Image 1 (cartoon, rainbow, N blue to C red):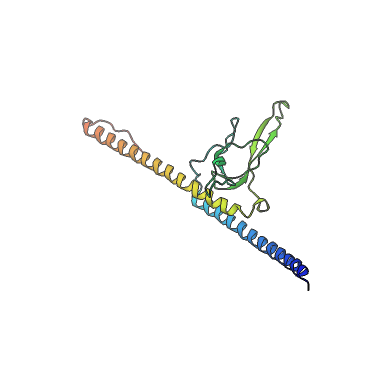
Image 2 (image 1 turned 30 degrees about the vertical axis):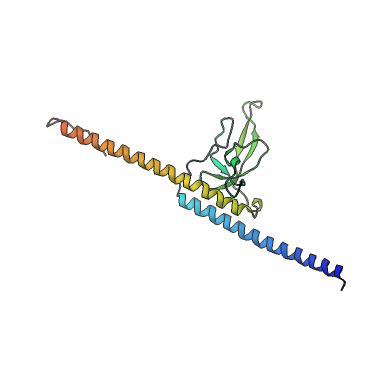
Length: 187
């Protein structure tokens, strides 16, 4: 076999190997993405991620973060920019679900000329996911979970301070109440 024929044969073999490896990696990536998504939704237990930006515009609210962003291995600067018409970014919603956000025009049935642009966000289908999305999702989760936990900690501290204040107020009022004064009933 000539050297040139051998190189063509190796080229065909390497292409077939790469295709097989890519398809296996894609299947593994999709399974990992779905596992992360499921674990996040389960960990939230009905609550929502706090601290996510509003990616909507024109009064449309859509609290989520873009997933396919990167800058030096970190979540990219455009992760929190509003979604523009024509874009279809992969986003992680406040519910912990991966979606593809899309703007579309909705007609007003009562007034046909008074339609409006609306942001829809159907759950991402597995065939819309890319192999690289597994890395992007991990970066995104590492970015949003600490922010969420910090906001929860702040909220818990505020509730604790309010509870302590309320307890002191009740104790002070009880000390100063004349005997026989009616006390409001509480549940």
